[in-house]
Length: 304
Image (cartoon, rainbow, N blue to C red; front, side, top):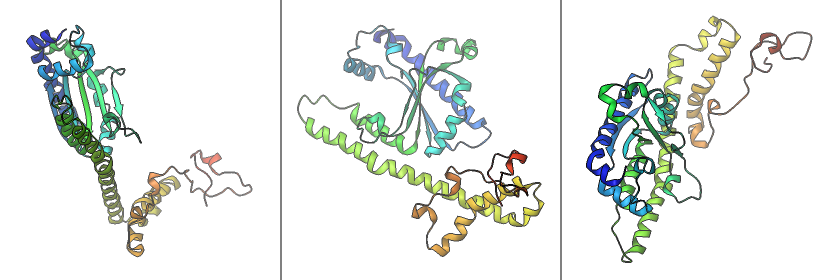
């Protein structure tokens, strides 16, 4: 397919494909058993005029393999609130369950220290996918057979930056020497906004959410009378799990007022966020120093 064919007859097909993909994703997210804290989905097909400029920049204006040279002729963007929301979505397998993914053209971008390329400034997961064969075989989807769509998965902050950067950087006027230095300064300022303000803000939002979950889980344990329930536990492993939750969710909050600050503000991570060996609460067997877990097969080290 060349640019003329796309502009004349395929532009509307790719626009319809982008809409269909967005509808499928929205329905799958809504039906997922737990909340994925999804904000919105946007979709569009590549504007022919914008596509022409992109092809000229890449020296591909005369290409006859447009559908493989440009992976975002149809595009969707899924927007979530925080990085952990994005991670939960990735772990849900919604993408793989509903689409065939071209993993060779799929790109996972993460911040890279010292890099100035836009793809290395923030987290963005860009999937290249198409409808599964069983769906494409239905009459209402037949025209989308073999058409690819790019799905970007980003946070709200990254989405805001991407939109502004796209409008400024990718739609820049032909300067022909005039204002080139100023435009370079604008580009550098955009990069500074991401690295200095938005990336730290994204991590701070994540910490706020983590602390809120800490508070909510801790209050739930106190309301349930967690310590009073210890004698009712079925075995020592159940008692360990209860005490571990009490340690992770209740103690940091109970200790904070006496320390005049929250442990997180002093750089102390809750133990639930650190890798630590599981300690078994079974008593050591009499007659030897060996681990009691040889008998109980609980995977822990000897406790008291």
